[in-house]
Image (cartoon, rainbow, N blue to C red; front, top):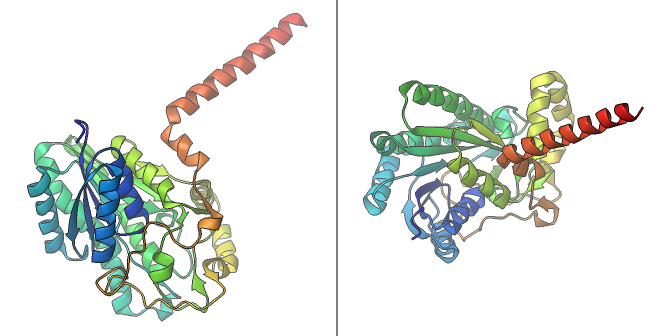
Length: 337
């Protein structure tokens, strides 16, 4: 392994953004611990990591089980010696009106998505704080600020993660520790979740356009892990537009989503998935789904906004130089007048 390699834990690593993120860290030569429930997906993710140049450790775990998460973190530390980066990405969801989601289903989404993040963070800090170093990356969403119809459980969990992470960040800054936490807010992604999520909509579940490839998110997560002093990163122009509109005209945005949000999250056809709330779609009786979903044809592989977010210094320098050139040009024209 390269001297600069790190030990990285990625939760929800068997598919989607977690799968792409694991590959991205492996491409740096990192040691990557893969945490998820689906053994078929985990095995394929481990192959991806090794082919990409990293070292893989598969740790099957349900992130809603605090003790199991603690044991998983200990296994990673025992195997690799320590934990440098912990990425909380695991989630589940239900696509349905709130009144059609049962209490047990709502609780399960909250336990996996929100408490899974809390339990993962606690387990990571147990190993990071004594070393006075380490980075937590919370994978968020534009929906951590702006709730949308048909995803009340998921939106509630992402809002909870946002508040939790802000509180934790204040505590870490107060303590003076070298451990950092940051959050990456994502747009709609082309992941397999839309083919395995529990849905009670008449059509097939889909992300709200524009849609981005999971590799865009993975690049942002890897960058955030190396630059964690920044409190959060916004990925995709749609994320920026949503968050700004919600800050300025939230009522107008709610009316817009009430009109468009139902149709925008459905394609023609019947949704056949039974959901992955209680058992993984890529488990022993399932299959590996990989990182990408069925929306390749419409998905963006790059994000100009995400690049600018990762390169704020270059952008600021370019803008400063450009402003200077324009000012010099105006002065020159005045001198000739």
